Length: 308
Image (cartoon, rainbow, N blue to C red; front, side, top):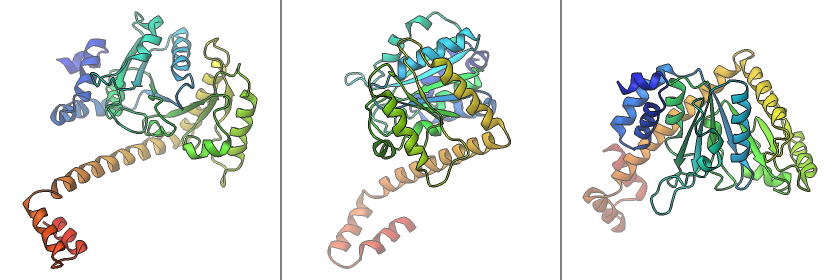
């Protein structure tokens, strides 16, 4: 009953399914994934990432407003820092998006990172699938903004928007941050501040230095989210990149590569969990004792553990 209600787009049912995905109970997660996955692949997922203070939340708020003016329904998954007291999301993005709180065409969900690196919560991909299955045509995923390297968003998005500020850093720093490699659109936000033109030149220069020109060169745009300046241009760039992916089999290839990466990470995580169970207990201690007594070398001991 809950699944049927959620697939009809009921926001409370959708919220409950996302809570189930976040719960960490493997059986419940698997049940939701099995029900949702066959219904997915229809939504367009827009990832927004960048360093702290770049104005990502304000930019997302403006994009949501633009979509609603075009009568498009949109869901937002905002990954917030974890509260040091409850472990839950601090809900900063919900506070900043109060203008959409009563709009039935907007669904906003905050998720806590709970220590997860890469800018996303562990359950973000599952939450996006629930929203996709429930019929939301546009899903915006905003990363937490807790550090420079927040590249996991590219594994959950069809379009990745990287947001930086004037004075954020030179082109070498941009390369080190790993953000240019995942960007489909580059945005210099707070462009009313000094240094915006220099930031654009630095990013353009870095793109010029690429060893192999990419099929899609990320446009570098200026926005001022507080005033709305440049938002229409940003959305035009998103639409152009979307059309580019729809041309030929590019979108299928991108989504297939993302699924392959997800499967690889799941298998690696399961293997790591299995390995952690093997490196403790009486058998492990006995092998350590054999190594210490020089009866066995560490490589041979590892092979025995793996064989068992």
